[in-house]
Amino acid sequence: MSPEPASPALRRAVGLSGDPDALEGPLRGYHHETYAFPLPGEAGAARPGRWKCREPRGDLLWFDRRCFRSEEQLLSALQGRITGIPELIEVGGIGLQRFIEGRTLGSLCGSGHPVPEELFRQITGLFGRLIAVAPGTIGAERRCEAADRPADGDTDAFLERLVHFAEERVYAANLAEFGALFADLGLDDEAFKRLRKHLKGLRERPFCLLHADLHRENFIVDADGRLWTIDWELAMLGDPLYDLATHLYLMRYPRRQESRMTRAWCRTAERVRPGSSCGWEHDLGLLIDFKKAQSVFTDVIRGALALGPDPDPDPVRLADTGARLSRTLAAAVVPLGLESAPGPRHVVAALARRHRARAGRDGPDAR
Image 1 (cartoon, one colour):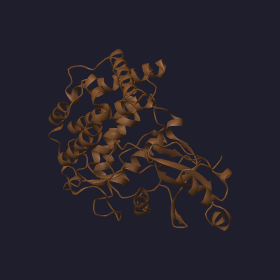
Image 2: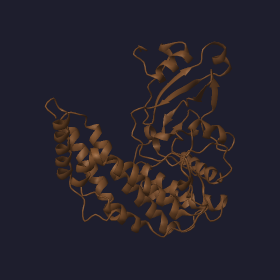
Image 3: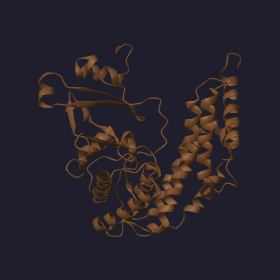
Image 4: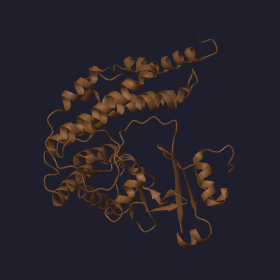
């Protein structure tokens, strides 16, 4: 690996490791540029294993609200309270996370496949430990606005702020670039009015710590079969049922195991903090509906960007993106109040028009 020209994350990792050839990375991850390496000399002898040096990606589009000032601060505050999270150290004034050696849950059992029983049990245990962490008991600085901190138990206000973020920071903030594509797909600001109407009337539940991104790639299974949870960047305080809804939506359990996880979560939640599963029979479906609706706007933007700047995207990638977005739109027809979902051909045509229009604006003859 050649360190020049180097990003700040790479320069920092090289300086800490003392050996560019010892680095692994950049590691796969959306929010950060990350490198793993062993510490050199006496520091490495005192702290064996590999450590992660990370920097936020500068050109990142954030599609999820962040609650805590830094992931490292939060993890530090959770040491001893949540098991199976990365250890933290500071070297030369730089915070490092221990690199968890193992395989992602997704590499062991991919989307749609059942999770082995012992790992399933460890996931339910993690939910119990999260629910036990009440608001006001975490010594980590928060960054979210006062409006994003509703009163404990006000699940309607909690969900409204998530809808507001999706409307303002994902949809409205990207209208200049993607407005025509949204319109081509039948998406406008009326969709958020319909979504709010669909989501009304949640039951109150006591708030707790939420990981808010518990999917197969954020679980690491080590050589001893122990489950570790990584990427706490999106953690927040709020409705415990939202964590379950997000988990079920992202994990894609087989139907029978999804039902088992729901029942196991409810038993765990009520044992740890009574009332945490109140109204789940009605509200869980609505929270999953929000995740379906939220995914429409984020996936449309990411899908279009992933096709690259070429005015004539690769036809196979274009067809795959169109089919995937059509499925995402179909899943959100009810919560967004759409008359119908555009089919794959419609989506492909809309994406192609967007690329041609962008090429006309940005090309050498653009005025």
